[in-house]
Length: 136
Length: 347
Image 1 (cartoon, rainbow over the protein chains, first blue to last red):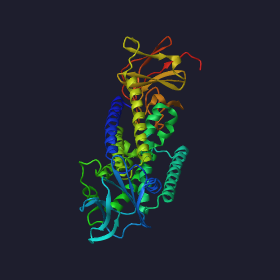
Image 2 (image 1 turned 90 degrees about the vertical axis):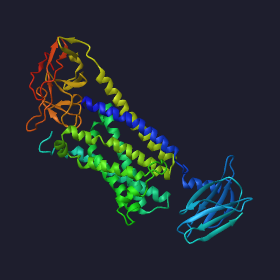
Image 3 (image 1 turned 180 degrees about the vertical axis):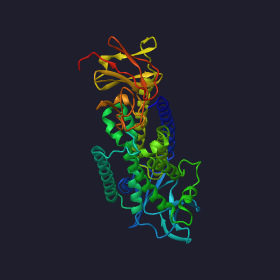
Image 4 (image 1 turned 135 degrees about the vertical axis):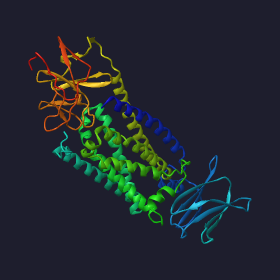
């Protein structure tokens, strides 16, 4: 290899090492999803003594109290028969409904909630129909 | 050696390596598919294919990128370097299947051109979490296609080794694009400690190996001759050069290989005309200096490939004072005959 080529290699790898490392750190910091596998989250929901709110053959709802924020776990075993399902809650001492997010299929969903919930509602936004309402 | 652009010799070793490449890829794909089917019950065949071939392509790209620096650190890895091109073409096909199925799965069901959809379905270029990572993979695939399609020595000869090498150094850019494609795509959506850890480790390993070699080569380039006699530079004592091997010496940052063979000494440029391989790390086989990378050969006394081949490298004048070897640091025209220094040593 000629000197010019060796120098080019050296420069390229200095640039890749620096830029690559910085971008990797930024991209890891921007990860919003849980690092635990779905099975691990499922196991956590079902075996760790979380407060189970609702349970049937297609849906488990559980509640976890943490020091900084509480978490609502939805384990969707069978997907809802709706193209787009929204989840909303009504907090204690309010009548206003707060949208948490959407359900796109089976799996475990986690939502940060900051107060006690009195009602959870699943809603088909396209057909404008209520799918399920759970009063707690 | 190149003659009529057909220097790829399908010798026994090459066939054995190719066989192991195919076996390795099949074993990986079968293992990946089996484990996925057993442990993950929500998938489509397209998803499985996308994941299996995507991870295979990344694994092969890492393997390809460690071979170069490993061969510079330890000559035992040279046979892998000799077969690296076939590994590269195999990796491209794995990446192509991954990209093709992804395009089909995510962009072919609408009423716009899938390539147009790839570039327009997500335009959040200012977001890290939602960055259009598929575009990065697309550009990496274009680079890998250019490399795979010009990998034959026909293109090396026609594009000239310098241009060919510049084109093939784009693999480093492709690697960076692939890493970002993974971090901004799959790992944003389904992160796990294992997947993030293994890609970070791979990046650190490849970067570290290339930097170690770069530093090693930089130190060699900076070395100065310890002694000069009327313009001749001291290389080493004759006993430091093994038979049929060379001592590599640096003159003005370029390297000269001083070979000892058949009781004679000759010096030629250290840079092979094929792909810039280090001739001084090769051996003299059948009277010819043989490049350790791809087996190109040169006669030590004139730097010419033996007929009918036409490659030529620069030669240098040598002299001996007692048992000390000196080189005149001015390169002679490529292929210039220089009478070897005769040694009075019984072999």
